[in-house]
Image (tube, rainbow, N blue to C red; front, side, top):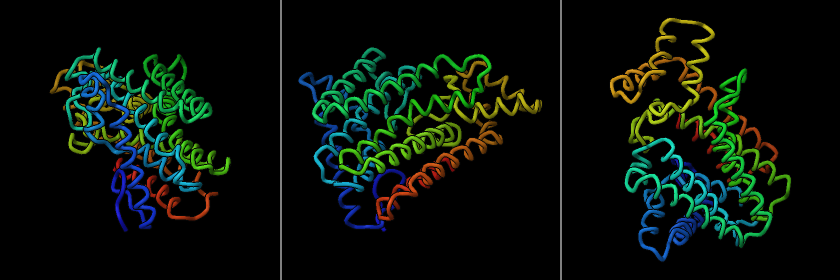
Length: 336
């Protein structure tokens, strides 16, 4: 049993492991090539997060999905570069919106160069992704455009908040289906589509990616509360400090409204205060880590990961399918 990709994913077949590693190495080279500019400063800014590393979760999914067709088809590596470039671009923009100081264990682009440079660098990465897409054909362009629309819609919905009378948890799940699930769904879709897999397989791997993407984001929500900076690569409680309504916080508010326990109401009141105050932020973080709302968020993560795994059932048994199933387990493991 060897190890490849994010979270120490185990691959039980030497040929598959070798091919996936080769594919990911080609993606890495493609990312560096795509982020080069004739202007050295742009290259430095664009490669800032590429060189910081990362899980390369989306390219890995492209590689595994391609095993259900021709895994050596010419469009597979470029499509993996496209989804990772798009993801990286959103990180530059997210850090500006969240006023984050750290990303992937290094200083965020906005902290280093300012918001304007960070936003424009994200735009540069979107442009480079579009340039690669143009060579993959109109269908790939349409798929990416639809996913990007969903991604932006999810971000807008998050910013606007739920409309009156809408369940905040249901609203939030719609948000992350757009913000995170859409691009991970495209990863599964591109891998299968570019490999020439049957349409039914493309559909299955798209649905799998959507559900896995939701579980992936929910695991991140749990990590924002439960992890230290070494585990997550960013400052613990960043979303908490910025007032971003992640699932553990939404579950806490739900429990407080339903049960009215004084300690829950007190914690909600603390949450609604000024979390720029370090002492207050630390107290809220400590109390949330011990609260049942965090465990409920973990159970929600497990449920979506199980749904993703169940989606794979019609696929033929093979090492790639086993690896996709293990990805579900790995996402759950991240959430503890």
